[in-house]
Length: 178
Image (cartoon, rainbow, N blue to C red; front, side, top):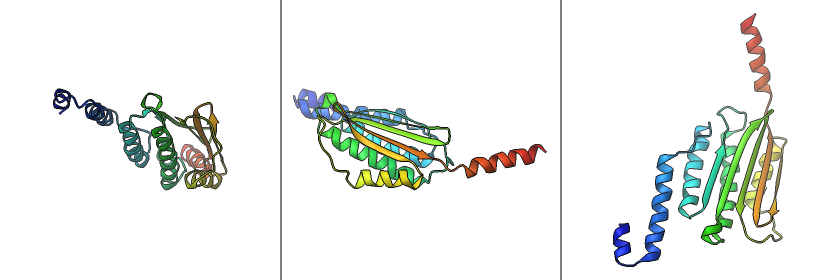
């Protein structure tokens, strides 16, 4: 297919096909492995779509199943963040498009950060996606911050994880050793 497009001197179509081919091969070669099966599927699809739009994607997300955050809440968080970031990136020249996504659990907290190319800083009004993210952060007694840093847009989310599971595990561990 690519050779045929090049022979016909259809440069833009050939370039588009190459980027789609590259994005699909990256998806097949390196599926996302966060530790949460549901989140893996969502990120695989969303980040694959972003890569097909020629957005350089860096994903370092580690969230084990059973961490205490409802899977639907995780999907709403990541879906809104990625959709907003991809939309902002599409307005940028191809060479400037990027999305970096990271998440870790530390000291009973889930810390999530996304940074994407967004162009010049401007006043923005939080839309439905950012409001959804803020509501989930509040549900878990956490916080959400969003705004520009130079020509990048950054979203940071902190969720406090339920500790009842940790206490129950500690009690169970003591009971089994006695």
